Image (tube, rainbow, N blue to C red; front, side):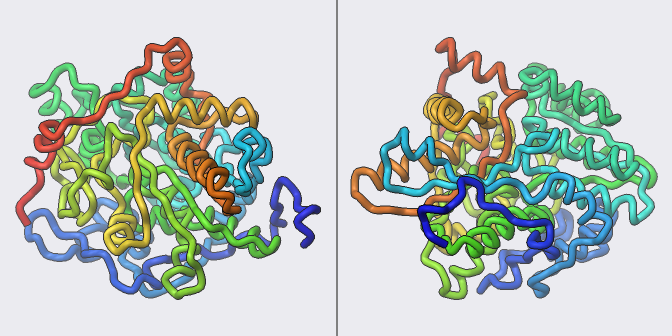
Length: 456
């Protein structure tokens, strides 16, 4: 296609959308270390995981041989209500930066949850319904996952209890309203509704909570409730599998319009959106078909990749989950209450961690005020108010585009606009009135988290 006739939006038809999820693990040269049973320290089996997770999700979690896994017809019909999501050329941002770079963003916020989380939420609710379960429990940080799962559970007819990180529930009261509108129950975490929650509150009554705390409460509740399972919105392999629909749509559109991205950027909390965005492109790099760079961007307040340790750790503060080998700040690390609530997890996806350790991915951390400066610029020129999480990717994309201006190189940059920021107005108020501050953990703060790492 003639570049002069290139549209601002790269369209896919319904027939061109993916019919399968892409399982990156099937193409990885070396698998990440296995999950370990917290009691025996032996690799987890299907029997170990099915008391906690849906059977089909366990099957997907342990599958590292099938490259393509079919999206069920009933779920595919649901996806069609919001997918394919827009892949947009950021022409106004390019002009504002006076850069020769071409910048594209995959906009995942065009649904009521306002984020990419619906891709996996719908899959997990679908499988729960198929299995005959009547309820699910989960945690949520900034609230995007809780909202998405509430939507999905309402659609498929499954009850839901959401444990939301307390400081995020205080910062975003309207998230609670949306989640409850879809029929789910929301509990700020830590709470007095679980043994783990009461224990955490006893040791620190004023804690703002963490994703690790909320996970512990959700798992405890699921284990005590008949016909109930726990579901997770990031970190685990099956979640990244579901999110691969993002990267597959990007790749299909780029191939259709004969575009090859040079740099692919995603924000990084637990790793779900980043893994989903980069998966098919990383697959090409593993097979020598691409020289693209991949950049993970995390908050300086919770720097699991850039300052964490690559070690086995629990996925939750209550130390109930299997042990995962990942980049982690320690299960006892409590991040400062910055506004990027979805990026406040102490660890990182084992897949992302392995790719980073093997040199396929770069990582950088950004301070909060600089991230919001980038968000504000993007909103002014592109007309979309981005989520604080997504704005980490925007910051890196702007930095890479400025480098192109300085060197004269014309690079093609893709970043994930994982969601919108319309429930994050308290954060924008604090940035606009100058009261926002930057909190970076000291070495002493990090050591306190590392001291909670288990001996394996």
